[in-house]
Image 1 (cartoon, one colour):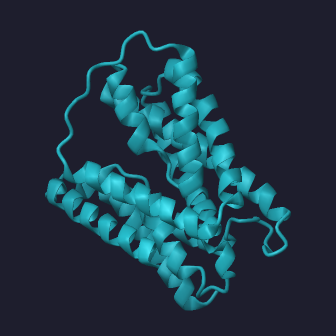
Image 2 (cartoon, one colour):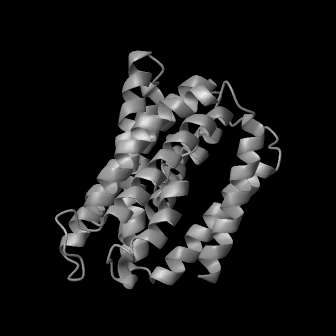
Length: 263
């Protein structure tokens, strides 16, 4: 990989780590659009760019959430009651989402990513009302919901925390435990999705990589700086006006989603 490519990946990883630490968002919201524009420069065939961007994003999520999951476990915040109910569905869904992504037309997959970015941006910009608490939810329904969240995450390369945390809060799970369980869920999504993308990539004649659809050098470079900068982002949360930063990032997501649609 050229020096310019390394620098872009290192910078993108630093930005993703900072935002994850400051705003509690998944790095995939930054990394996937970055890679969609960067991978063609690195020589990736146009028809494989979107799938490789999603797969590589999930690979970086594995690295960042592995660290945060260990921290939550040490502090005893992980509720295994909810882990047992959510993680199997998230992993099955992520596997299905990864498979669907390799079958979809890249243009439609890019448009789906644009819609997801736009919806998440709207959610950041519009004040959220606390929904009515969910009670007496069956295990089967929880499994279906988690599978749906995992499928969407596997399709567009996000960790799923922006979906899991609100769900757990409506299920009366304390916020710290919800974040901890979400971290475990994001790690599970990343592992299941990455394994699927690697295995499917071995069958793809256009992918000449030991990592299948995962772009190895970009994955390593982005992971390095995102892990280093996430703690700095958490520190800056206490020093900067996070609400203004969140609005600014939401506007950036709107711009990115429009650019992805326009192409």
